Image (cartoon, rainbow, N blue to C red; front, side, top):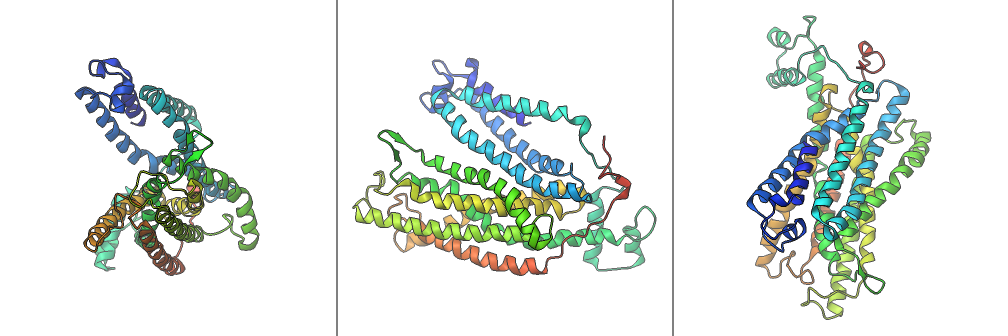
Length: 438
């Protein structure tokens, strides 16, 4: 599906047959002329296919990659922890390259080539994936469907009965009551408090691509005499920070921490997530202080009512908050990925990563709700916190609010983490070296 969707996007923008009379791929998508109905249809179908493909690809691909490491083998267990670091390193490298290269091609050469290059990259990625088919490690199970098994165990837990009827319902293939299934359900339920106490982190995460970019557009973005930094380009500092710090974390921080904790991963997954939440809190405090200074500069320069004017304040004032966001991702984002992969039943690891992704889906919706609610409330008292004229808005108040919510979330996370019991490791000798290799 990813390849099909990118192919359709390329065709919709590159082939003349899909363009209106007198239009090219560049003028059609730049708004210089109206696209044809066929082009619009193919374009939107492609976007929906991209979303559908991402929903299936993201959790499954990462789970499949992590499955190649045997958690019961000491060396492979350490390597699996590093896998999540380097997986995110690759993701952010691709994001940074796309931001810096593809955006330039799409704006200055054409959208056909801009979509065609990612499509070609997808073809090469698929070919490389297929080349390793014979060497991949697959895990086979002789048990019934994990979803059906967990559903029966969940019903039994709700009934709270240990009658012979429930025992028969949850009987394993050997005819004996299997309490492991109930423990799997309890393990899934224990994940929910961790999930809930990371929602505000996702709300904060969504600000870097929205309000931060709008703020940057009001600042002095000049480098030299003529070049102006695009406001959205500041987001590359997040990716560049992640790309820079992941090797430091994996090769320096983890071995150093391992000497004190005796843990193969250096620190626990929940400690890593908590550190990321602390950094997110600091990032919001810095963002609030920078925005307060920006508003002060606008007042001092007499530019409050001229929102299109560039303020006499350098763009580089905003770089620290982007760097802090990148550092927060190295800890919290990767820690959450590993946690929700590791702590679900083995047969539901893709579902665990989907559970992780749902944090950010809910967080984005909650962010929209907060903004709408605050906008409606503050309009009644005068100027909205989110006025179209950012010089009269109060994004600094919003950032202080998010910092306060993050502090409350962090306190709740610490409480939940202290009582959380990690999933027990059970060796599976029937899998030999970590599973059946096909």
